[in-house]
Image 1 (cartoon, rainbow, N blue to C red):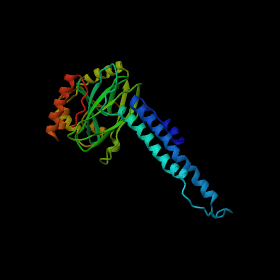
Image 2 (cartoon, rainbow, N blue to C red):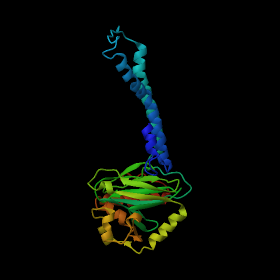
Image 3 (cartoon, rainbow, N blue to C red):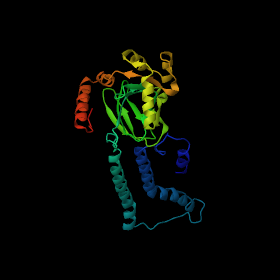
Image 4 (cartoon, rainbow, N blue to C red):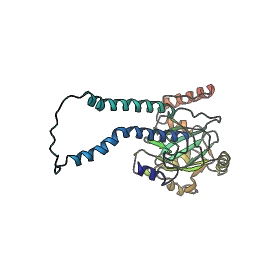
Length: 303
């Protein structure tokens, strides 16, 4: 446990041990609670193994041990009862927290969630803000204290989307749509990444998640709209080519540290990418979204 505590202070915004949102905070608490309960069986083993090795070592005077074997109810209850009770406690603890950690569950807030469409590429993440009509690669801006609803798909092999300091991880798969709800509760620059081993360049598929105050987010959107670079069919064909974000500098004029920003985007891009692999799923997705918005609710569609 000591190395974990020391490592937690090595950086900010890179781990759920330093949570920047309620989901990661819940995961951290669950991690420590489960670890503490597991110590009930781990600590005795850690302490008794060296003691037994010392007590009955070959050179000890009392090394010869001739037990008088007999059945013991107290020992049987101890050996079997403690693990059974521990498993029941852990199961109750995990199941109770699992509901609050459901990635599809909306985060309670008096603010409407920000919609972000995420498309996994080789080896980049493309973020589309459908309501603001802008897009970005390599950087994700998020307003502090406002829920964010991600809808994710992939235009290549399966990928794993994760912002550790905000919590949770979810897969993005071609022809399918998954969902993730997160919230940042304080400003920071957070690490985002693909944690799926899916090619030699996956280790470069990282991005900066910029958790900023609402006013700064609005200014970021306004700045993005002034870039004058639309994400049309031709631009997307270039962005979706296999390679790192830095490789796009030969085709676009931008600073990789600030990400590649697009001032406008085709509103059907996300659906088009889904339909490329499963046309029927794309149509169901459109119908579910329309029904969800008309009901003002949160759909848990099985895409």
